[in-house]
Image 1 (tube, rainbow, N blue to C red):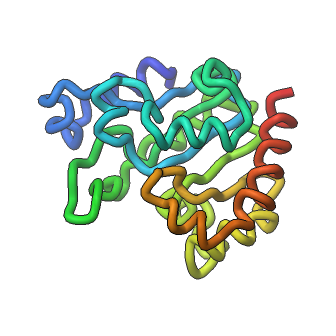
Image 2: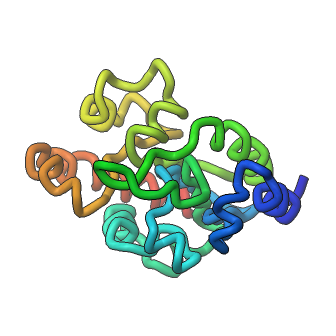
Length: 192
């Protein structure tokens, strides 16, 4: 398989008919030379409508945490951006709906097989952490992120950088003092 054939298969998949009818393209980025993969939840409405992954306040915060420039973050030969679902899932009662079950299981593996140089997987939010860490994840997202060193050097779990998580960040100041500096160091190492 190639990146192009996978993208076309995602577009053509009957499970994505509703997104296709809305004019949505699968929203992810992947390149053969990628060194870091960022696994997130699913695109937000603004990002989906713009056609650019992480193109919102959450993306700006994530780029800041990573300690890179936006051009670096947008370079698919440096960063692969693979949400758990490549389409905006729609609005729910308490924010966006969760990513569809089974989507990552179907599409992440063939994409990752085309990126042999991945050195770091950044797991943003509970959906990515549950999928990639399984039983190794902590009891809660906070436990998982607090125990980030347990998953190094290959993986690093983060809280979602959404502005809606300001209360979590205020209750957990160790995130900015303990996790973000290590994240930046691991990102810099992976990109060299």
